[in-house]
Image (cartoon, rainbow, N blue to C red):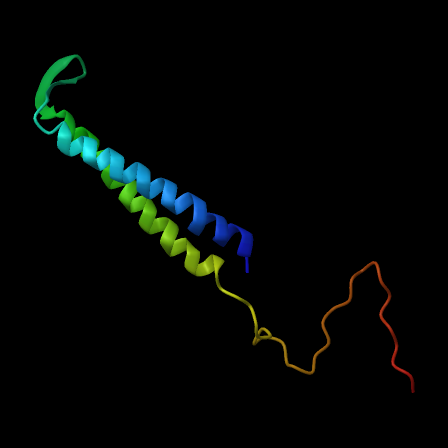
Length: 105
C-alpha cells in the first residue's frame, strides 16, 4: 500500500542499518580484551570489557533490524479486495464536495 516507504526501507534503510550493525559487531569483537573500570553512582562496580558494552549496541541494532522487517509486512499489504463489511453492491460514499448523481428513471 505504501510502496515508496517499502522501497526506501528495503533499498536504503535496511542495508545502512545492517552495515552499521556489522561494523559495530566487528569492533565489539576487536575490543573484547579492553577492560573498563565499572562505576555506578560514584562507586566501584563490576568491570566489563569495551567489547561487552559495544556488543549490547550491536544487539539493539539486530533487534531493530527485525522490527523493520516485521513492519514491512503491514506496509507491503495491498488492499486489492473490497472490505468485507460493505456488500459488493453497496455504492461507496461520494465526496462531500461533489453532489451525488441520480440515476435516470
